[in-house]
Length: 319
Length: 255
Image (cartoon, each protein chain N blue to C red):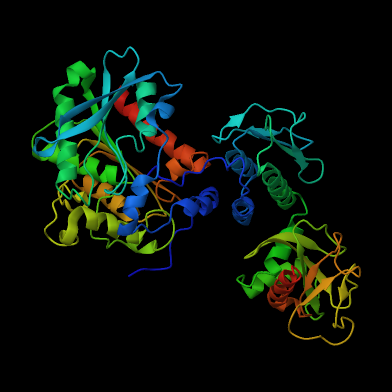
């Protein structure tokens, strides 16, 4: 049942939210998808890369059913060998491209000499489950098969994604486990979208407020799963929250805000990993709305969240 | 959904966004954030470094990314006083952007409020906020009233003025309201409200009624008009009601 009681926003984020909501309403409905896709959501990649010593190239690879999909490959100029990051972008399953949220892994490319491969999976509702997860898995397979020539030392090979990308990362990691490969050493799930059922307390606390509220979640999951949403006919790869056995997964980092719909499913996922003997680090940022580190990076809590996430990657890559 | 339209970046250099600026700083002040947080806000909204010199101690400078910069001097940058002895400034080179003046003004006001809350004697300000707060328990409000030296049996009025108005003769403080910041003053029932010319209200006799009264000075409201909303006289325990009426009356003076 929707409720009016919810954790308050961080002061600095509350102020930012007032302005963010001017351009990005809390509730995304299906009829808004086309307009949102048409609006530029990130600066062009050339601008993002300006001033960074990073090379970028694009390759067409076989996705689900052999259909050609694009991956972007980022590495430091002169890169020889280093850790690998497979990136699955966010956008609620319905918008975004392989450059959405790319600043986060680009930071890791720069600092740790990693190679980032970012996949452009096909989007819902035109392409429902399993296209998205299978495109992501196909990209992971391609990356692992070409690791040598990409300069990736697979001793340190992580998957990372935010929001819908976090859900797809978790689902892809489960596929990799259950299909006996490729082998990942870590997964970074950034405020991940894991649960189509919308039954958690936090999924009921944000209706018409914040960023990506309960209504938006219904829109995204319905586009992704159609009539199957909320039924027994949903795989753990499409909705990782439904997995009851999380053993055999790589070391995991999960972060989420206390003031967003995804809070409880992220916390539950970490809890299930620990119950199954896994290695997981969980951070719940007080007063964080969905995507707060990307939308208000100047805020003190956003800076801390970014540093903490990067700190985990630093430890993982050097361990 | 991440990295979508909605990322907080510098305001449009040409389009005025006064409401956004006011909303941003009102939210921060309402949450009683520290000065560095206020500076970060001004910096991200303007897109340039912002500085603060408190006068007697080390200052602060921040960047639009929210990082601390080495301390610096106000120099010739656009600046504004931020309470006694202090200054804030915006390091804008070249042509000022449309919202620079508003950002600087609201930053200065917010910093002044923050400093007054932190100063010794800020107990006065907290007590005023508490005694007017309808959501505070009656005991807390009674304690606050005692701190203000209010006799529980002697009626007082809440008076609301614009946040930028200077303080009057009676205890006052800038407080957050649903309509933004305002200056709240508590005056005894018989007090002479300086500059106030009350149309149709008898302040010296019996309580004129439950509603608040808008007031302006005798000149009828020129640029120097000291507009105020005056709440009904009540026992100190009922000040939230008087304050609520005073706020409504203050808004009526907008016309």
